Length: 162
Image (tube, rainbow, N blue to C red; front, top):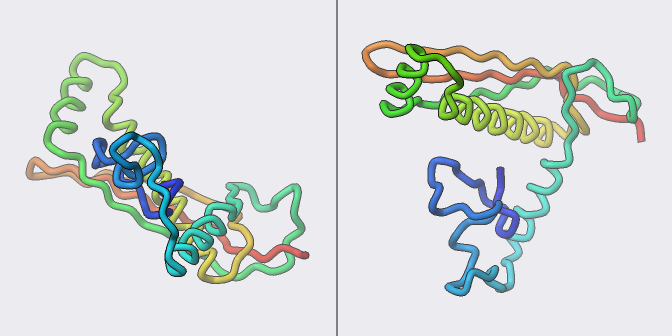
């Protein structure tokens, strides 16, 4: 996810620095968006990020609203997220008493969003218009008191007929 003002990535691990899709630093002391002229580089980055966000993704092998002209190649994105000791501890308690683990679900959601964004970046860099046949594979690695969530998103980058 990206800041709606500056276009830089938002990190869910820094909750005090994010507010309604914006970095805290993008606001002045009165809670208003800091109005400053963006540099040429910032404008290019913002435009690039907007184009990346528009790339459509699907788990199916076609887009109903687009005709595929060319298949480019298989692309992947990989994410590894650490489950900190507190998340592990609370997830362990949930194992004993039952119920949903909100912290684990949040890590799963964040990893999915991050991986799909990175898949869009891969497609953008290839000049693709979309990605079809997306598959998400989750794996957990744990041991020695540590737990990591590994997610791979793969799909086929395609060009649409104009």
